[in-house]
Length: 194
Image (cartoon, rainbow, N blue to C red; front, side):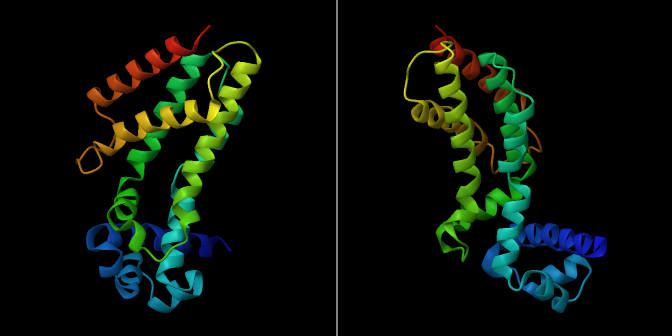
């Protein structure tokens, strides 16, 4: 069983590399299998088709699970500290998955994958943030603003900061990005606190 996971992992990583270089349509299953060091039959045995491979990569490497764990185990209830940790974690996950995000961003609607495959992560973060802001309001710690609007506006600032660096060679947020995030979190927390 461990061999299957190892092979699947190799295939997922190879798919991201080949698709990032050649695009989804330009990447053949034969090239992906070769890049993973396996034969094409092995790719089909594990994933069935190229679109399943991309969906599995999105599911495995994007940020929903990381954020779910963060919200469950690392947040303290201190607004500014929590928002900064959320923003940092989001940026790190996005930068780590830059190639995968480029594929989806570049080829978006033309990809033969379900809408859920690339929106699941965004919707999960929205739900986590909405619940966090609702709890903060219930505890009387922040202003009574629509929690969903708060969640979306926080997400948009963070997404904008990342997307402005999507086509850069940066492997992690640069000093300017970190400063923008720090400052926006500070402003956001100051505006919400009672």
